[in-house]
Length: 73
Image (cartoon, rainbow, N blue to C red; front, side, top):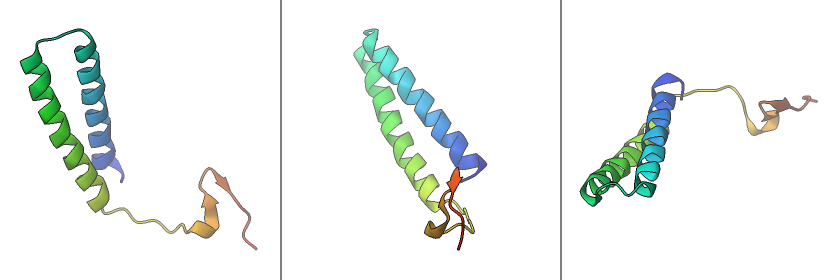
């Protein structure tokens, strides 16, 4: 999940935050409706891309958390 998937997650997140902000500003319903449809499609594409991304790691659950590793015995 290096570059492509993370960029897609960022783009979808920004789009959905923009949609939420526009909904609070009482933008026309038809614009919000189409943005909602596009947002739902983008979420499905994002989830598919993240789940099918070719990401490999050598870490296991025995390594605990990557930012707070435990000593191996």
